[in-house]
Image 1 (spheres, rainbow, N blue to C red):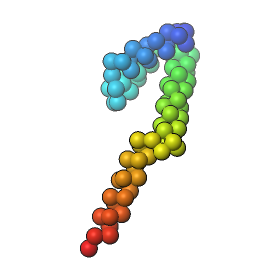
Image 2 (cartoon, rainbow, N blue to C red; image 1 turned 135 degrees about the horizontal axis):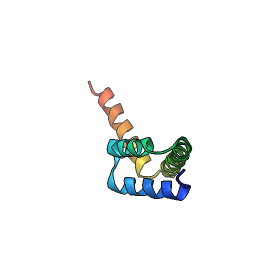
Image 3 (tube, rainbow, N blue to C red; image 1 turned 180 degrees about the vertical axis):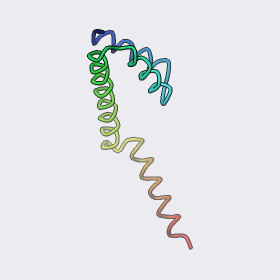
Image 4 (cartoon, rainbow, N blue to C red; image 1 turned 135 degrees about the vertical axis):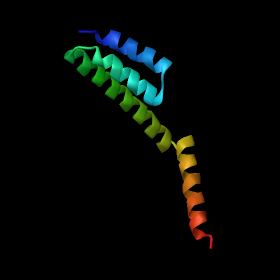
Length: 85
């Protein structure tokens, strides 16, 4: 069984090399070579990192950061488009 530190290091390496679907595919391929216990630990690491990312986005949104301002602009543009004859 791989240690948590080894799994985290490998996830960091994959994240530095890939993004999006390519990252997901690389993680899936890496996972295929792990035993059941290591796969569960890998899953926990990925879920924890996803939660940190989600929390960060939420905090920025709540602080009326860039994302929220952008979404507000999109909503306003959609309202204007619906109001046009």
